[in-house]
Length: 400
Ligand SMILES: Cc1ncc(COP(=O)(O)O)c(C=O)c1O
Image (tube, rainbow, N blue to C red; front, side, top):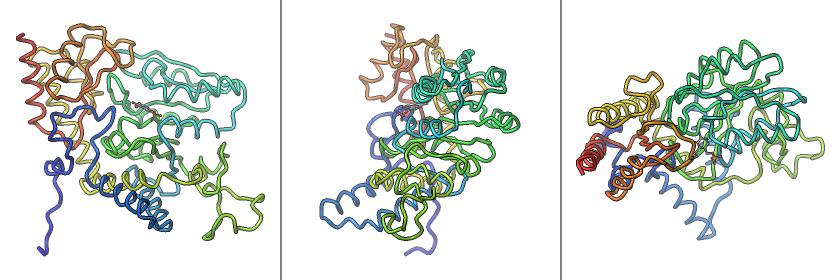
């Protein structure tokens, strides 16, 4: 055994993703490539279930270790993390637990938010008379000043995505967080697009709730999510579902904890846990998060953003319209190409862009289309060769 194992570099991490060699993969904004270490963790659980040897105690240990890894990734305490099924589930669980009074308001940018961060609030409007106050987008950006301007004395919460699904601009969460905290307004964030890519510090950002899911930047599975709720906020909330894993039963089984009717909610966000977990997906997410922590979240962000920027510059040089331009202060790891932001969710009415999309996909490039724009999204498994290949294909298509 060598006595020194060199730290894993981001460049060499590509070899841990079999899918990266199957053509340029630029669709992390839809779903990431599955990490081989996550696949191994999944297989171990499936093998144990197939063989009848699944050890529930070890499965619970996996739940706690992944919870702690996620907490490390976003820089909070493990007690501030609950398991969910997806982004919607996390936002809805938080939103529905707040003590709403008719006329209370939440502020959102309806024209840029994903439906996952809208329907839970509209549902509260219809059930409890909550006002959903909307602000319009501005040049593809969720405007900070409009969100702040929409806050009044009835506003209980603002909900915003850290990076929009299209055109993929990054929102200045910490600026809004400072403002909301000073005014006693809760800030919830949909971190679907940023988790695992943007270095996240929930305390520095001053967010009260953050919803994340497994299949994109966490390079694991659909059907698992995480909900961060700041301890001081969580402990004043009553979850809609009170469940056996959301109550404080000490070390034993919840059924043996005395008078179940006199339950006490679990500390922090743990009260939002509901029944049995998706052990397989938690094992997968844990493996991926460990990889991200080993590589360093700050280094991951810098690497991925630099790649996306180089790509945006190259696309501009060959004459393709990068939405927002290359000197966009809100640029992220998502680069969109097209003339204008449209309204169709996952198609484009622009014949040129549709033609380019067909050409790229016919040549093995995996990318997305959102709101009339071609969407290229980056992660640690991308490299400059991927960029070169796509630029070459675009040039060939433009010469056609
Ligand atoms: C910003 C954003 N929020 C939420 C989602 C998905 O939400 P859910 O996991 O609830 O389906 C996506 C994409 O899938 C997204 O891009």
